[in-house]
Image (tube, rainbow over all chains, first blue to last red; front, side, top):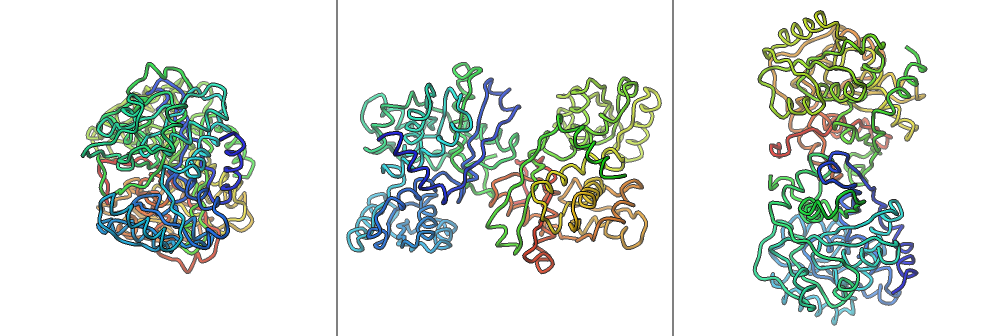
Length: 311
Length: 311
């Protein structure tokens, strides 16, 4: 891993992604007591940063591999991102989804000609089904967060943010499967002198927080968090990066997440999903730590059911 | 009225407003069958285009007039816009509001040191109270839509849009009091060769539509529209401009407005108020008319109670 790899990654995916804007808000700066720079991946293609990693993973395949297609299991943004990126590149995409996945998610995949393979809703069934397709079709398995090409692709959001705001003291991201924060940490390490990376994590799903303490990958119990994109655990590819380059993880309560989300909606007039509010919630909870600093926040996505809001 | 006046207006207010972005959406273009360019006044200071007209009206006063203050009656975005612009310029602002105005609106005015004077909720009481303050204090009365300086200030949103997209065939705005569409029509007349201006209006409050047919200012009966910013009628300053320079008014049903609003929220991940959705609803309703055209839409504002949505 070196800086050159990330630069090549960025150049490779540029034609397939939006360079999303960086927004600021005087009112939110006052509220938080620091200078906030929001990298708006909610405006990314398909409404989430996942498009970056998915594009890079497929673009990194050989011509022969592309001909055999790709397979992933996801019921969320990554499934659509893989479908769209694959369609753009003329690659067949097999998407393993739990049979009880919402119709709207299935429709999203179908829009981009992804082939849905249904299975039971357990992680075991999803993995088994995906690996079976990998073995039968020779398709390349793409992991939503625990794969080098996906992590490198994700790093490009922070690279763009640092290009625009080179003076950042800290970048915060939400932590779910660990793919976004690992990529962000690599970007900060290679593209800035001093910028730290901090994660925000729901207290009820604080596996990353505990993993950094115990030094091994911890899992979550049976929990519910409104930040539904963060219900996943770290993996053996991203965890070492997080251990090495991430400063800390801040845990936030469910109410903090909802308050932060509502503030961004009302003050910035943009739609972000609950997972995206977790990083901002971490700033609001620890104001002293961020006081007067230049703080980047990666708003990871904006895919939320607006007919069913928590406020 | 000439082009020079509008250029001077724009230069005058530039330090007091945001140059808001112009956003596009591939998906909405496909849905509408034309190329849409959304001028995002929901990202304007205070979340609405009203900041443009309010700033210009106060900046156009003499030093002596400024010392006597300004007065307006409004329970909406204009009250806050006048309060903020006045505060920035060290001018006293008297804001006449109905006693039953929502506390959140009153708080908004107080944030910017506007002095609230309460009265009964009828238009007559509001006007009488405002004129009394004008006469007693010597304050200059500012009208939210029916005043030349306000109309000129409003024109700057379309000027910026045309600077960025000189090839527009049409610009659409919502029509309420007529101040936005009149300003937009002046901008299109002086800053483009061929760009037409069309208004969108709720069918249940179609006073502008009827006014253009009858040739005199029509009023609305007792009605309710979700586009609460559009419950006002034209005035003698903006109506002649609208007659001369506006191509037509398209009426839309309440359901059309809600559908258009939801589409913009879900696809563009931005928050707009119902009034802002009216112009886009007019495009969706008359697709043939706009087919393959370059269509600008002024999203007038984003101030909406997100805890009480129509979907």
